[in-house]
Amino acid sequence: MGDIPLGWLLAVVLLLLVVAAVEWKRREATTELQRTHQLFEVSLEINSTILKQDLLKKIMDTASLVTDAEASSVILVDPETGDLFFEVALGEKGDEIREIRLTMGEGIAGWVAQTGESVKIDDASRDSRWSSKVANRVDYPTRSLMCVPVTSKGAIIGVLQVLNKRNGKHFSDKDLRLLQSIASPTAVSLENAMLYDALEKSLRALSDTVAAKERMESELRIARDIQMGFLPRGVSSRRSVPIQMGGLGELQAEELDVEAVAAGEVSLLSEEQQEIPAKVRSVIRPAREVGGDFYDYFTLDSSKLFFTLGDVSDKGIPAALFMAVTMTLIKGKMTPDMTPGQLLTEVNNELYKDESAMFATIFCGVLDMQTGKLEYSDGGHCTPYIIRSNGAVEPLRGIKGVPLGVMDDRIYADNTVMLEAGETIVLYTDGITEAEDSQLRQYGTARLYDVLGGKLAAEGESGLSVQELMERILNDVDQFTNGALQSDDIAMLLIEHNRIG
Image 1 (tube, rainbow, N blue to C red):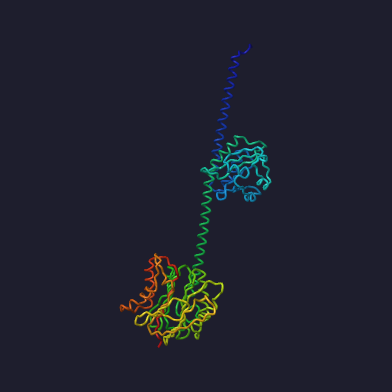
Image 2: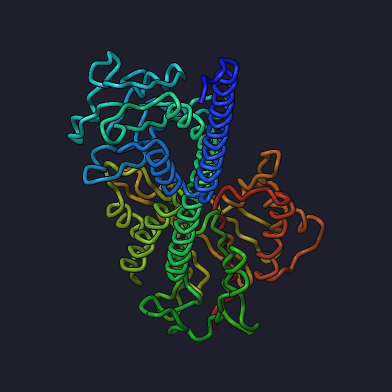
């Protein structure tokens, strides 16, 4: 064989170069396709869950896998403090790692979060930005690392970090670009997961609040039932438990109106109309589930009827407790030979406490149904009215004392007035006279006087039964307030005297 011409040699070399270039391009295209496919799979993997904890674990596992790193972490930025923290940390010392917080700019992760720049470091211990806070806690040597920001809508919400290339190698620029490519879909998924996590926490908090509210409402309903159990359902002897018809059988029986209870109003309504020596009507409307207004009535002997109505200074549970103590003391201490003034004096001595800010206005009386004599004592309560047989309305004035529980060693005075057959005593709390409409105007005593019959008597109209009168007062108050929120408890006690014998 002769020598190969130079031209042929050049042609062969050129051909080899072209083949090599084509092969290099093919390999580059294959690598890029593999990288694209890998990122696509990473994106699918990351977007396969909306749960924050699961997502963070997937991100960490995926980042370690695609960069061939020994470990990885996602460090989030606390939007309230600006600190960086580990939401998820794996391994035996995961709990210790979760306790670590880095200030913005602290360590390499803090620097990346502050500047928004990615870093690739071959020897972390020699980098001036290196912080050993985490490494010392977990006793894990860090050689090489890469750290990239996780950005959403222009704000850095965390950093993605991988540690130690396997087999002692260093991370390449290609690895850094790959980690940056992972951080992009991570940001969107992470923000969605954080929003979902916040929604879940809000729903759990709402559920807990609703459950607590339902428990409280249930407890308040029980407290209301207990409180209403203190109130009489009919005229009884003082010792009757439970309260039923007592020794004075001719007094009118009463029953609890169940529909009124459900509507937020407890009324004691007549069971039937009969010829009786006394008719008692009472109503209470707490402004809340439980309140501080109270009343009681019971017989002392065959001819004497004791009655009382009061108003505790506060509302809600504290008022209900004070009311319960007051009613217990009244029922326990009142005897047939005791006057109303003596009763209030003894009850006040029991209730008064130096540190207590609670008190109760109260009116109590003893009606002798044979003679019509009414003996009463007033502890700073709203002035009651008497509706005379001719329809005239008179304020039941007398010597007033201070409310119960305000001052100790107080002597409460007794007052006396005579009632004729058919005359009515009207007791009420300031929830009636101070009821407000939407303009904060109060109902007032003038309107109450007119409804009780002062205006009607002047016009020659009278003769309402105690039941009709009680309903008329409530209806007039409701018309005046016209749906405005009830600001105070409402209670009334009406007693019509009809002489025995």
